[in-house]
Length: 447
Image (cartoon, rainbow, N blue to C red):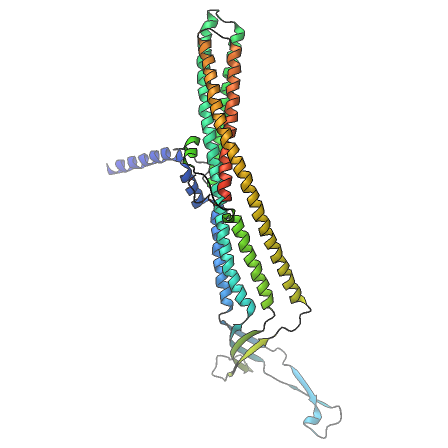
């Protein structure tokens, strides 16, 4: 009995799991943004760049800490070196030019050494430590730029999905409305109250509406796929959006800010700081460097390989200071310093040019936003008017008045108005989004 219950429970869990797997995950815009910030691979890799920068700080700091090494060396002289000296050194009666040969050393020797080196002063080390800390701040700013780019794409994709979803609703309503008219006119055709040409015109409108509905659904699915890609979401999963274009528009507030808050401007400022540190580093390269060292070694020499026997080892201990004073490098250091100064001037000019570019973009985007708002309001009203005209034409046709050609014309007029309305809505979203990015409000603002 217990076994049966257990099997049933397993089967039930499998059924529930399979049903859950096929469920559609709904996302608000804020939820889509949050998912992207937590899961997008570009953001994760950008975070890893910060981790690398932190380890670079540790690595550079380590240059100024004691460097301790232990080394060992073993030598086996297959042929003990032979030395040759003038024989008169040992025998005053030796003939001129006579030499004496003898072997110096022993067949086996080994050495164990402990060495410690300490940097006492080096100008480039001080600048390098400052540079690595600034590089970490630079990577943190780059991380924010990556976040901004990802969220920008998510918002753009979500907005496109809301427009596409609204278009699907519109296209479906047009199919239903036109289908009702065709069904009604079919009765008139059978009663010979209308001619076949009128009926063909209505069927043409119906097919056009159905084609538009199919295209709208494809566009919507493509928009959802783009949204999943922008979010870093599993492409094989099923998602849907829970907010409409009108809801997103109502959530928005007017963007206001300063182009100097732009993230690219901040990155350029930090790049100038790095260039200033590079100039400083090349200047400090002309300063002396001071090091301290300590070494303690044991040496052993044997005629036989018996280093582990109780034989004598000879210690050798030394410490000292090493001072390096750059005197003349063939003008290399001078040329490198000049190059870094020129590079700094280039970066400063680039920052000034970026400021002008951002100010120009600010003016352009504000103009585009104003125009987009006006066009959106007009196209929204125009679409509502076209829809009213079409519905009136349909009602007239239902009671046997008017003609099918007029209905088709009004249908086409409405479709054109809807297309222009969607384009104006997308332009409005795009202008608002670009202004938010210009002012660095993408990450902080509720879209």
